[in-house]
Image (cartoon, rainbow, N blue to C red; front, side):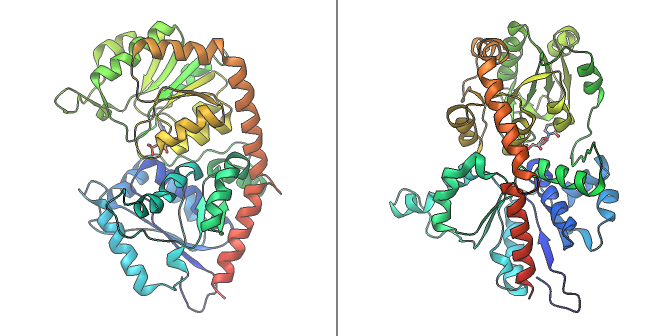
Length: 398
Ligand code: UDP
């Protein structure tokens, strides 16, 4: 927090070096810009270069007075230990910022936070070789009360100050719509070149007939796993739109294949469509999409939920296992494949989601989508929380 002649709070934002972090945190930054705060958005150097190359992000944010992008020279996401840079930055902040500021932020789902939150108990039970866990004073969580209320109540016992302001992408859209009276809003924060030909392909497919398949920006799979998915999808006889990042497939020795196997490229025309990167939010909102086979990244989960699209979950790592269990067992928004990767299971789950159990999933996703939209509209839980966050940040500067 900066002290000086201008009494506008100055917020420093430093997202983790990944697509999911950059995407959601930029949306948080824009919501805070709309509230009139000065923001310095620090990025890893290579991440920022990719962002600028593939999006209009600089032009988009240039309209906000007091917003600036900064990179730390030499700070690369490709570094073997990018976390060292984060630690260094936090130590600098300890020295230079007002005490209240450095104890602020977080931006994940409550259900996965809950698992991290329980770590102290595991440490106390001597089940983990960790001595100290950093505490923070307040939490900003990309979720909404109606989705994760019971878990949030548990977390509030330890951290009373929680701001649930999600789904961030829908929240920002709603705010911009009301301020700028724009009906359609698209804001790509992509680190890859977006292939928009898939939207034209979707335009020619019947309503809710296509399964969207994407495992996010980090997941790596073997060629064998890729082929199991391919056979499962083809055998299901449902059309699919599949995002395959060429660098995401490895062979048995762990080497990158570098390209999509030929068999998939040949078959794509009549069975489905394959791209290297898609405009995901727009894809999920497309009327031709009837389901999403996902790795259960939190952004993808919220985007699917808000679009009312049921999911098949194939979690990869981190918070994804928890997210996928909640999708299937708690919210009933889809099916959890867990770590199984078998063509027969893929085929059956696709048919369950798209045909046999479709009705029940469509009902629960439509209900959740409605709750998500209400939460970010005027007077809704996330909208009120954002107002509270803005007021509390202003108070910090007094
Ligand atoms: N995404 C995209 N195009 C794609 C695949 C993913 O724009 O082809 C976006 C997606 O909308 C989401 C983000 O990338 O906002 C992925 O974040 P998530 O938390 O789901 O997963 P991660 O990549 O962090 O594992």
